[in-house]
Length: 75
Image (cartoon, rainbow, N blue to C red; front, side):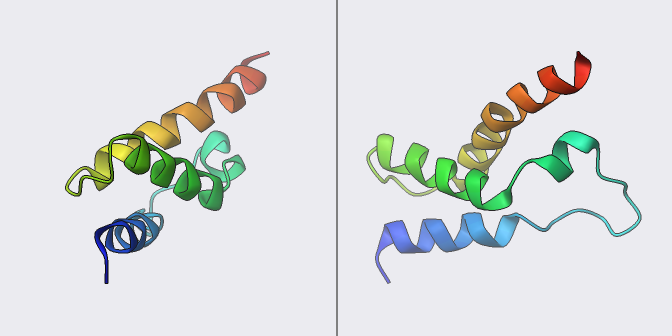
């Protein structure tokens, strides 16, 4: 399996790591995990497909995509 596919799989596996008893905020439930996954993969490719930053890519993508949702909720 090439490095980009390994990274994409790692990112995909991260999307459901919430503790069972922890409640999701409205912004978490309104952000599509597939969109986060796609953006995280874009970040990976933009960095030259260098492995090892999958969590950083996921969190950055999540933050980018949640910011507009949180702004809309605050209104």
